[in-house]
Image 1 (cartoon, rainbow, N blue to C red):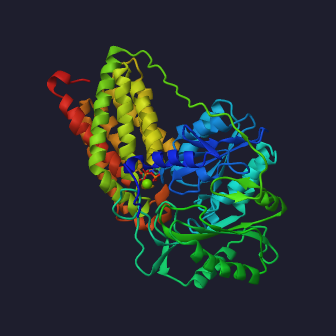
Image 2: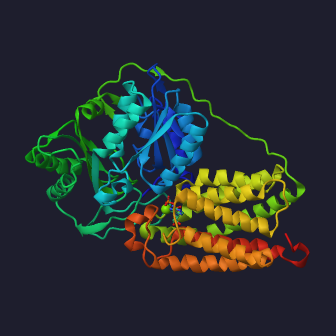
Image 3: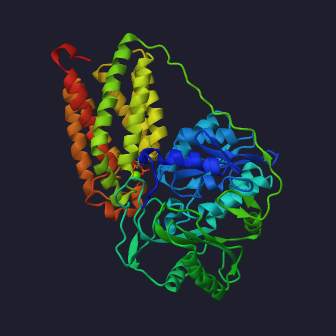
Length: 581
Ligand code: ADP
Ligand code: MG
């Protein structure tokens, strides 16, 4: 239970503000998260980490000498937006390049990749190393699909130490990848976590039971067993992780760093009781323990649970793991004197709104009305969307869509008032949507809006053909960006039939409103039909079987939105006088 908050929607922002004030010795706030408040005086490769908030000390608490240079801090359990990552990476790059490192979650991958593309286009040398330590999230033959959990710290620590030691970007990338290849984790949970203001946890673990293979965002466990004793849990951890020793390592004689991580409400004392047996079992197997960590290193709000991570060392990894580091959430050795870094200038680039034709401005007014409709629909459906996302995802789809839709609407309205045409109104709405929503669906809705905008432009008169083409191009753009196809149980399953039906009806000469009406019907049917499918992509893929019987939340919200845009905007404007637009 989270007891102390003001407005739940402001929780993450207020937390970051307080954190930056409390941890000023290490960090300063910057647009998108935090960067170091100190400098060692030498330019190094920059390590930029990040992810949703709610995992302290990940990610802001891992910024400091010997560790990360900056952290993009998203909303609670929601990926930071591409803008946030871009802004933090820009603030950190001293010209020696940037390594982006973060846990492998669909939303984070979409946003960080967008940011990387933008940074590269601007001339920054940027690389990415995903953390994939959670052995329960995919089998060994699909290791690259695994999620990142507490093993994040192993990869960040090694990369941060390499940067501090003066490695170039190739070298930092190489050791970070190597550390990830050598890191394996396994987690369990005894209860779910409850986000501020929520009246129920994101998932329940029945009394006396333990979920095995938990995620760190309230994704439910993959298996469930009776709660073991501390010794039995230690044995489960060690045996399972020793079945997964990385290629090229022999357990007897190996040197390993164990991290026993508390997820939020398991006490240090309980962890020590578990660790006692972890240490003994590792020794029994001939494994030498180096510099272990027991404590809260990557949490999941107030979740009762813990995980064991093993980092299998070689000489280079051992030297980098053991090097000094100093951050608010993790310290090792002594980093020596640091100077205050220059304050990051809060960038504020209010871009001017470009010229637009009268016709395009009229279309922008309709677009702003459509945003109002989206807000109304999403506000109404938010709880239900959250429940759908809870079945196999992390329960935040309603929250994310609400944040995104409101921000998108406000930005589009502001653009309209500034004289924007259709493209500019949609672009501004898209940027604000993805920035505030975070998450997978935030990145995808931004893609949809931008693709439609690119077809409409700021000059042309917007008629039904342009709208149908815009929707088609949005559907193509989402598939290119998210790499989902029809049948993967994502919102693509609703977008494609919507685009097909709209194109077909408009092509046959039907008015926009009635063509859209039919297309919204097709989207609705297709969204409901996703209940029969098994999720294979996105966050829900780890729980594919569980998703059968429940429709995909993103497909359902898409169908509700296009229905709302018809009923509240298009149907109303298709009075005889407004025909043809
Ligand atoms: P997150 O998964 O980051 O928590 P949301 O819960 O807001 O984000 O959105 C989940 C929805 O995103 C899913 O229901 C699905 O419709 C959509 N989605 C996930 N991955 C993809 C993808 N690769 N392509 C298209 N849509 C996707
Ligand atoms: Mg979600």
